[in-house]
Image (cartoon, rainbow, N blue to C red):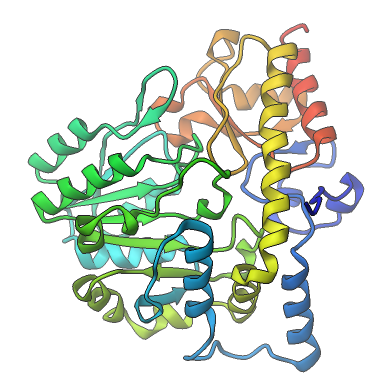
Amino acid sequence: MLEVTALPLAELRERSSEKWREYPDDVLPLFVAETDFPLAPEITKALQRALETGDTGYVASRSPLAETYAAFARRRFGWEVDPARVRTTADVSMGIVEILRRVTQPGERVVVMPPIYPPFFDLVDEAGAEVVRVPLRDTGTVWEIDLDGVRAALEDGASAILLCNPHNPTGTVHRRDTLTALAELAAEFGVAVVSDEIHAPLAQPGTGFTPFLDAGDAARRVGYALVSASKAFNLAGLKCALMVTAVDETSSVVRGLPVEVEWRTGQFGLLAAVAAFSEASDTWLDGLLNTLDANRVLVEDLLASRLPQARYRIPDAGYLAWIDLSELGWGDAPARRILKDARVALSSGPTFGAEGAGHVRLNFGTSPEILTEAVERIASLAGR
């Protein structure tokens, strides 16, 4: 298997992206969802070709991306996507807002499931709707959707559901039967489900990842999927996401969006996404998944030996570790103390909702050496 390894720290500090410019050089940045790996070779080739030929104009109205993604979905998830029902936009967040604006009325409520990617709260507001919180249920071994809570919210008038699958920050891959039940609930109440599936390519083999639109007839009728290569292939700055539907009614909603929603797609983002979703990049993605598998276990081992008060559950997907540090007594937002005294930047738990009190989110999409140093620094605050 191809080995995908992180770049050296000195080389990473030459980057100009948010991860490497937000804090001084004495801080180890493990907060924002950027990774420390080199680009997949096919992406590098595609971007180099574009630069060499000056291919830096407007995105074309016709491109191979829809067909390329459909083939990717078939290979990786066993999901049949109709390329005619795929449209692009700048990023997943933009797609969420634009779709919510079409499936809700101003002031209506949208179900959100905290702890959740913090911008979800703002995206609902930007769409003119209001958040109704239905937290994930923590069974002690897994996080799962609270279907009874969702039903209660729908009975109380909520008009849409904003889903995250795989879930950020817990890394949960929701079970097929749960997604089917959620879709049937949505169909019963006549509401839409908008599913953010940006971390889907990072579902570990064996997790049984189910795209929402593949979870049954009801899911196809009520669902909108937002997908992108940006997290798995570290392309967030290039701006390209896909809006996917499965039936005429939902497809007409997406087709009815202003043309500028699609024109905001970045040319480099589109070219890079075609390369990322091509079969030629599968070997690189498999190597990345293998590296992340080792890293998610390394986080568990490091915490067990250096910081046993921490509670961490190995995620099903992605490169984000959701860690409960409540037992250390560092308050609701331990990331503040960790940044100040250990010089490690983590995402602060309370920004993910009240359920994040005492938690941090750590990005393990980096080298074992950086992970080890980060945990060592944090453990030093606990006197270990």
